[in-house]
Length: 103
Image (cartoon, rainbow, N blue to C red):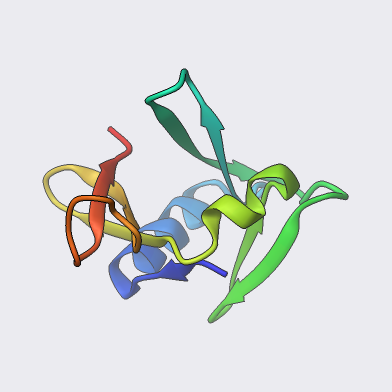
């Protein structure tokens, strides 16, 4: 399960309002190489059959099935400047959340 902060939820709902044909927020993570990963956020018309669905106070979040285990515990934040940020609870160097910028 992921955590969507109020600021991220607000921004995503505003994006959906601007694109009403795509009401599902789909999240995924993939390996770029042995040291780097990439997160993606897309708005889609429907979820995919293997997606793990989560309701975040009226916001439908679909997590790609292959990404679900890796996304567990992730916090999705939004702030200015910088936009969306993924925070991982098990950052290897600190006891606090590690920051993974999407931009």
